[in-house]
Each structure stands twice: as structure tokens, then as C-alpha cells.
Image (tube, rainbow over all chains, first blue to last red; front, side):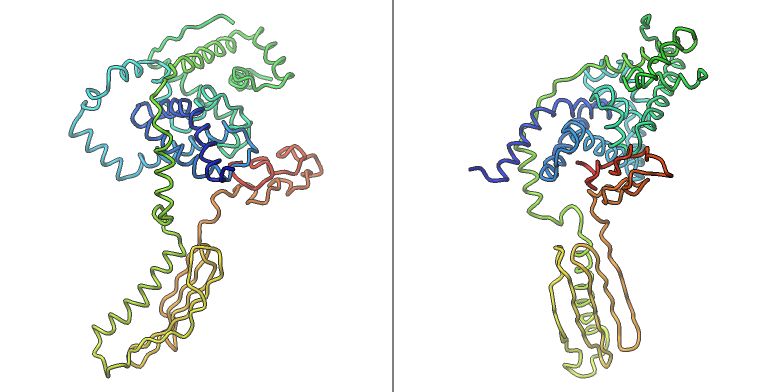
Length: 182
Length: 226
């Protein structure tokens, strides 16, 4: 007979194995760099572990896990935006302009050149999160409404606006997409 | 419907979120209107561009790291956030200890023993659990007797006051931010915030909860993440 704790740990290990890659990829799309993505994914799973006992499967597991990931990313950008961090990064930028670029691995730079990544980077974190959760995680508007505490119709409006913004930017930058006939 | 209305259908269409009627209407319009068709194509290309971001296969750090980290952390439950109750306790202890100490050191002691500390009652030690807390403590500096009161519910609310015989000198209230898991739309009731759980709003079927009366955000259980 296994104790509750052991059962919880086993369940967590399953979730971890199943979702790590997806959560990592979500975080990577959100932050645009691998190191932060790895850190964030760890944070997400720490939160998943801490609240797993209270999860009563009213929503699907994936919605739940991604909603935690969404919140972690919101916190991440909030931390990044804090005055202290803003000053620190400004300082860093002044001190070592371009160092970050050099330090980035070749792989990172190749991926950064990906038009999709560039588009996501231009959006604000909320819009970015919306599009990734919709397109990469495959959540429905209803599930997104639960995560963003709003209604599915507002989600529809938010997504429409986000894509419109992205299109305007892409056009300004002269990005060309392959267009297919309908 | 005008073109602007159909523009708002483009994203839901691509995400497969249109109802059957909307989809039919949309398709009819797309056949007729070339500018909307162009926008649809552009948006679709954008969506595909984002979908094309390669999926990575990162090395997965061992799961034990998280479980161990977490369990280590939970040995010290106050390490992340100092619970309001504990913060209150810390302040009370500070008052209890620091004030008489300061008085002892900085005021000329009239006679030895006059600033003796006496505890009138200690009904409960304040704790972070949910038990009722009531804690009275009095101390004397010179001729003046001070009374420290701490009351409330452990982990939730604490009221602290320091008073002498005539006036209240210091008071402070600590409130817990509340249950963070509580659905903030229905305030944890589980009932639809529009129709209050009746399913009827303005004599019609409530369209926020679709007539079920259950909070749409938490599916009626009052919890945020379930």
C-alpha cells in the first residue's frame, strides 16, 4: 500500500514526463531564450507539484498546467519589468552592448531569425501568451477565458487584435509570408 | 453584416471557434468580398508562420530535483512569505521585548524592580493555523502600565494594540490576502456572478452562465484552478 505522498509523487512524475517538453517550448516562445525557458519550466513544475494535491480535475490537466505556466510567465515579465530590473538591464546594456548577442549560441541565433519568433517577440506578453496557448498548446477560447479570467468572446477580440497588430508590424518590416490560395 | 464584422470572424474561423451558422455566413461573405479574402489569407499566413516555429526537444532535468527542492522548502513554511500572523507575532514580540528593554536602558529606573514584567494571561500562542488567538500582555515602565493586546484568527487576521491606562498608543491590523485559490469572479461562492446562481438574468436566461447558475469561471466550485 502506497502512501498519499508517494502516490502524489508518482502522479507528478507522470505529469512531468508528459508535459516538460511542451511547457519548455511554451516558455521558450514566451521568453525567446533557452536559459530563461529552462528556469521558468522548473518554476512551473514546482508550482504544479505544490498544488497537485488540490487539483480536482474539473478542467483538463493540460489547461491546468498551461494556466500555471501562463501565470509563471506573467510573474516573470512582471519581475523583469520591475524598476530594479529595468535599471539593472539598462546598466548591463550600457556596459556590454552586444555582448549578449555574442554569447548567444549559434542555434539560438538561427532560431531567432525565425519570422514566427520575431513576430511573437513584438507582441506584448499577454498577446504573445494568448497566441502561443491557442496555437501551440491548442487550448480553446473557453479554456483561455478561464485562464485570462474573461469571456470567450473577449478572447476572440483579444486574439483578433493581437494578430492584427502582428500583421501591421510584419508589413512594416516587410516580412513576406507564403500565402496560399484558399 | 459589414466587412468589419466579418474581419472579427477571421481569427475564430482559423481557430475553429465559429458556430455553424457563423461559419456559413462567413464563408458566403468570403466568396463575395475580395478584401476580406485577402485579409484572411494574410492572417492565415501569419498563423502558419507562428505554427512553424520548431518544437524543441530539451534535455529534461531530473524530476527528483523539483520534489527535493520543494520538500526542502516546505520544511520552512515561512521562507517564501512571512505569514501575516507571524509578522504580527514578530512585531508583538518586538514590542514586548524591545520596549521594556529600551525603557530599562534609556529611562532612569526609579527603583529596582519597578519595571517588572507581568503577564496577565496567555490564552493561546499565536500561530499560523486557523485557531482563535487571544493574547494579553502587560508591562510596566516606571509608573505607567502598558497593555498589549493581540487578537484575531491565526493565519487570517490579527489586531494588535498597545495602550497605556489612558490612551491607545499603537494599533495595527494584519489581514491575510485571503485564499489565493478562491475564484475571484464569484468570490468563491461558485454561483454565477451575473444571475447570482438563479440562471435568470433580467427575466431571460442568463447568458453568462448559459442558464446553469454556476459560475462560468470556476465551473461552480469556487476554486480558481480546478
